[in-house]
Image 1 (tube, helix red, strand yellow):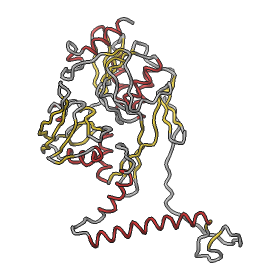
Image 2 (image 1 turned 120 degrees about the vertical axis):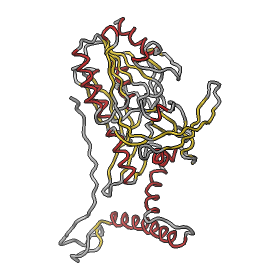
Image 3 (image 1 turned 180 degrees about the vertical axis):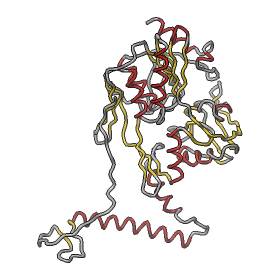
Image 4 (image 1 turned 90 degrees about the vertical axis):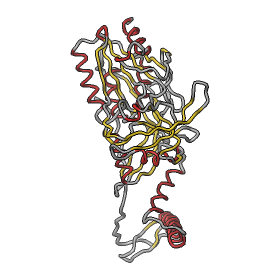
Length: 405
């Protein structure tokens, strides 16, 4: 089992106090009356500062609503102010979400939603980039690829800091169409644009696929790490082990990441007794994730590429640092920071970058990625997986390496 420190956020919403007696010390304000609250000078200054901030906000909101030329929906300014508070952080992974947006996020981590089926992120130059299309979804069938940039949705340009808005437009009812303008780098290094119309569908993410390869080598592909992934991985591994596998290949190619709890449970099956990863806040506070001594007793190979991000890199980094297996493929994406999801009382929510994670050897790979032990590049248009093993040279190499052990 995984042992880790648990942290809880507590929001103090109300202040209650009844104070009887006081003293004449200068440290206190408003004394003797039972209908008054006694606070320190510091707290009073804090209260006045907060009051000034909200008075300013209330004044601007009222002035705009009364004088702005065009109509404003009720609550729009307030929601905009909350979004702006997170936007100013200049972090594409931190955001304030309305109730609808927050529900969409919860939907995605549960493994089912309606849209085109693509994982996206934001580049340093503020563009929306496809980390990976989800297998067997409309985006995958339309030919969208890792590294493609989403420039427009339904004819409207979107920059990286408008990621949530773009995602909202790409989602919709099954059977409806959405027009996407894709910017792709050609073989000559020159970018070109093309338009594609994609029909939305229910996206049911099957995060685990597995098979038995030649020489009794087990193969498990993990497409993302959601709430169900670790249980499905254990079922797949148990089935393969019951068939007598001689080695195991875990395929993390184009896996954009997911839940740290999920990937830690999977790592626990593979590593033996070790640190899997730890996170660290700006205050130096650490939270460790451990693996126990029980592990598979066959050789392990892990397939990675530039679409392997975040939680995929936690698993890849732990395998590499502990020598538990061999990494094969190309350098990973390089996302080494952790977001915390915070539900709010009114149904809205926050997603905030609160820590960075480190591999067992104290390496933070954010913006750097993880280099494979065996570097082997494949053409972008080559299909991969057991059904395409004749073309999938990375998978072929993994089989060879396991057979040599």
